[in-house]
Amino acid sequence: MRSLSFRTAGESHGRALIAILEGIPAGLSVSMEKDVDPELRRRQGGHGRGRRMQIETDKADLLAGVRLGETLGSPIALVVWNKDSENWTAAMSPVPPEPDSNPKALRSLYLPRPGHADLVGVLKYDRRDTRDVLERASARETAARVACGAVAKRLLADVGIRIGSHVVSIGDVAGRPVESLPEDLNAAVDGDPVRCLDAEASARITAAIDRAKEEGDTLGGVFEVVATGVPVGLGSYVSWDSKLDSQLAGAMMSIQAVKGVEIGLGFEGARRPGSGVHDPIEMAPDKPRTGSIGRSSNRAGGLEGGVTTGEPVIVRGAMKPISTLRRRLPSVDLRDGSSADAAVERSDVCAVPAAAVVGEAMVALVLADAVLDKFGGDSMGELHRNISGYLNHLDKRGFGER
Image (cartoon, rainbow, N blue to C red; front, side, top):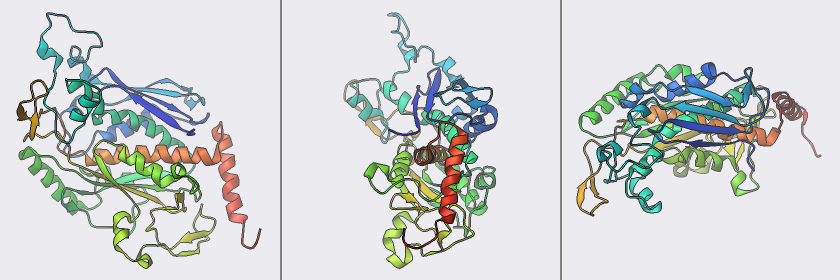
């Protein structure tokens, strides 16, 4: 059983997105205005987003699990209201339509989009109208994930772990590699229109997104999530499902449109000899949370054998281009089997910068679960004591036979 778990519910144009987060210890200070809503705003940003981001002003309402500014140890219930739902009351009504209602008001769609869950969804769940599928399959669902992730990030920050992200590339334009990342990664990139560290590449990416929009096309890209302050020893090598890298990979792949994940060097490591991949081990008395034994590099991305090394955890996600194209691709009409162009639903041209923020949330949820799994604690005080005892032991354990 996982120490931390969450569930989301809701449709893209329904009344709201709902999330229940369970496993947060009691005594964590949490503010919707300071901790959660800023993350929701970050998710809405980035050059290439569609008109939906101009309609919604995402904020989270807290329904349960927090009293007087602190968590209670009970499940936390959050809701993000969909402002645009007022224009979809007939289409998203939970009750059957009246016999004389206008069919157009139901906004039914029967032309599945290539690359989307439309077709596989209607076949799996035996539906005909792809509206029954696309409303839940939509990446709008990630607003609820980001709300949960914001609470997880708050817990991690309380124990000295910071998470940020940046865009590595969009389309065929990539930023120049940097020797070292800024200490506050998000502060360095959130002001950039595509959240890229390379200003010159950012300008070319912005122009590429504009060209794609003019051509009725979309663009994907690669983003990187970095977690610093992670202690050595999270995760495990003993079972396939306890390996932390497998959990991180699964979490990243669960994000809509993400089709590839790398940790550390990732696929580049497969092209190098072992001497150019593995991180030499050295005494590191100045490196915290490593037991004074660290690595001279971090090609492994902070994980070896499914266990954290004490180096920054680095995870990249590859997001395919969004499947809603104004230059529509061929499809099949589900009513009669005739050939036709795919449906067009209001959408983005590029959402890679936003996907990076969702990636932060998913990494935060996995790492928070790993922290609670290793250190336990029904309260934040107990959690801090357990972590402190572990880190003190690492510093004092020394060498020699046991």
